[in-house]
Length: 99
Image 1 (cartoon, one colour):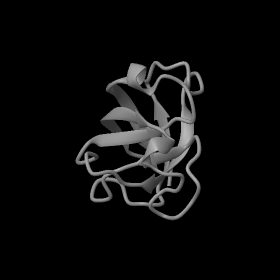
Image 2: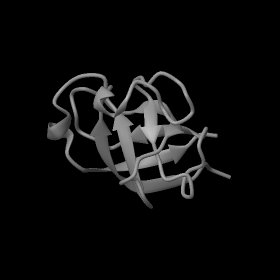
Image 3: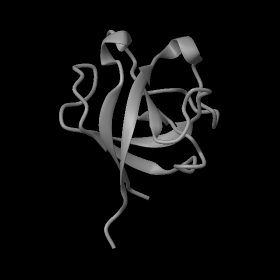
Image 4: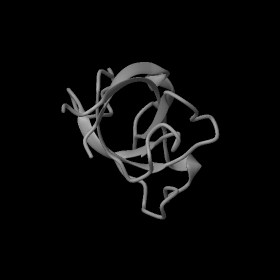
């Protein structure tokens, strides 16, 4: 069967939230904060549908390795190393569950 695709709302965060994710790994491009009741920690993801110059064009692979107090339900928070994170705002994205 094809892998599930979730329609979610994404926001962005940077190192102001700390240098390590919930699993103890250094944060980097591809670190995604999730609601673990929706996407289990450790899940590999492919994110697409955003419009932001600080992320790879078209889409990118990441890992659900972080959590956040405001990240509940169909919300993700994407770690972005640099750029105007406020300009990212809230964007509708497609989250592909890779494995």
